[in-house]
Image 1 (cartoon, rainbow, N blue to C red):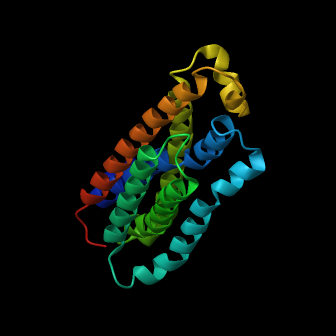
Image 2 (cartoon, one colour; image 1 turned 60 degrees about the vertical axis):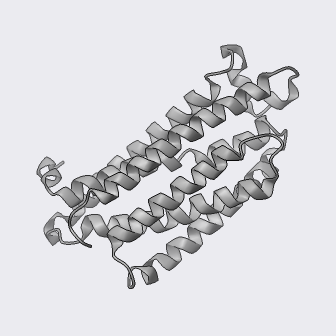
Amino acid sequence: MDLSLFRDRAFAFGTLASFLNAVARMGIVFLVALYFQAVRGEDPVQAGLRVLPLAVAALAASVGSGFLQRLLSARTLAMAGAATTTCGLLVLFATMSPATPYAAMAVALVLIGLGSGVFLPANNTAILHGLPSARLGIVNAMRLMLQNTGNVVGTALVLSIITAPLPAALHARVFAGTLSQLTGGAVGQLVTGYRWALASMAAVSVLTVLACLARRRDT
């Protein structure tokens, strides 16, 4: 690792934004798929199909990101992508209820997918722009390391948060996706945990936007 690279403000805040974005969004696919099993009692295939709008939106946004970078700077696009992800997380937080129609949740998933699809390539471009060509391999490796660390931290964080309102004896039921089979208030407690997790993810996503804003170099 070349720690001297962090003296470059654009690189430092760009990699910070990459880490925070991974923390904020990485666990969402697993969380939503688990939600439809543990809260709404759907099977794994149905739950997986429910998350599909996020993947399709992310793919479409990633494909279009190159064209958008001809019109706007990478820094601006990265910030816009992070802001869109934040909006999606807030919409999902607001609609997190067993009675919410799927269409409302699908809108939130599309927003998160679009935001992620725009943010990742634009932020990578912003990080790499203007750096010496001899350092690009090291820079990209450091970026990937921090991003993957964010993936692990984010997943562990949200899984801990969603089960926090529940007794420890029911945690295995949550991860097995069978909590909906129990009577009583267990499902309601899990939904509360989901709302806590989504609020935390949205807060981290706001920090991602601020990290994008803190970059000075125009890219």
